[in-house]
Image (cartoon, rainbow, N blue to C red):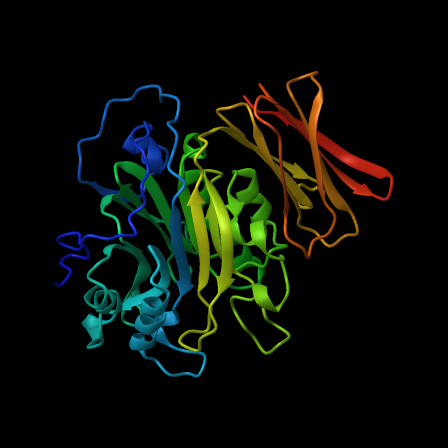
Length: 414
């Protein structure tokens, strides 16, 4: 069947559908932060419910979700050849449940193809949302695309800030989709931040990152959500702690080293290889694996994450940044309904100091967990308590070197 208006007309049966029990979530408007910032546009396929206090989250079925993120550079490969069919082939071979793509072009206005429509025609099993970014990209329209095997109930296209106001730099957007996964809302966001290393380009990218963080409601960080995209920053950039402070979790460093050849998503000349493409999750997901796909179909490599919805509902989540400059790393704690907790500790600065975290049952209570990540280059470390270990936990994070600790700070999760 042929997709119409970017959305598949009917959903085919699929043995891969995630079996997730219904949860009670806040209003649609709060979901996308539609009341918090101007400039967004969305459509809703269902009436917006009245505001209410969310009920305690129900248990979720522990099912898998395969996610792919990829900047396809308009179908232009690392060999200089533009061929959107190579993009089709890579996606088809991976067969992900959710795909987020950046740098797609609709060039019909200048006699070229509509690339996202080509993908929809190739994959009629997917629902889709094309989030337009720029209306004058090489004479056509450029933006981000979300593909989902599950119905899309609501869409978001939010224009990111431009800086300075008179610049001719490419406009950027945040695309969002609320998926109906057997009655459960799963929210997916994707973006492409500006490139460049100069003062102006850096400030533009920083403003865009802040806008993305502010747009997504912090009240929903215990629910299943994904944030993906080409952020155009390496792992040690200051933007990364900003996302950590907003309680987003980098799926890659849950299971892989932060650096090294396996982590490269944007190959250079060997000296400029970098990891700049990310799949972030909320703590409602566990990560079974993450990898890149070697291909010359784009100048970027696709990033794949194998995710599992946690059966135990997350009740609280919070992060504490490490270091006097808040850039050295972080500790993230998520609590479950059974009183257990999961601690993730990340060193994000190659300065010779590791990051150590302590968890206390409550303010002034007993220490129930400690964990450390001693180096920037490795993966983040994960630790867990038994059920019933915490009530209103306090997280303390310090930098450490040998027997010395410094720059300690703490936060209570309420």
